[in-house]
View 1 (tube, rainbow, N blue to C red):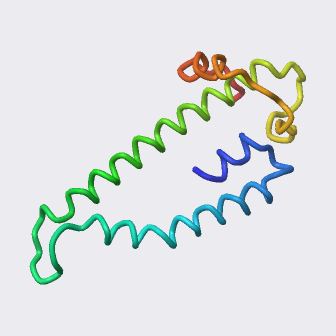
View 2 (cartoon, rainbow, N blue to C red):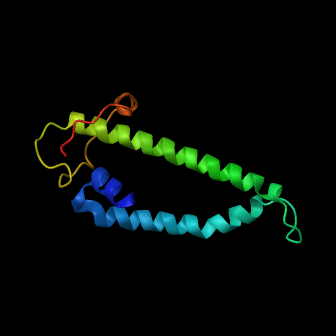
Length: 118
């Protein structure tokens, strides 16, 4: 999902910068994720108890919910930005980094139906 999301959000002209920042953030989170996981485990390593991973499961579920909410808001941002943008150019090749979208338009565009080209 990262390639189409980056292309749609930043445009094809800025994908190299978008992917550089994306991989840096994913690398940093990959460094700290084992530390967070080992901190959330309850009990000792001598026995295997299914309940010792309860907090890891809760953290994972909360992370998935935060990711889903972020993707819904990103979808609303892209839909609102496309409705505000009046030029008839290809949306993949345009530079949208200068466009400012009000937050209320983002929230109202989250679940709008799509009428895009196929």
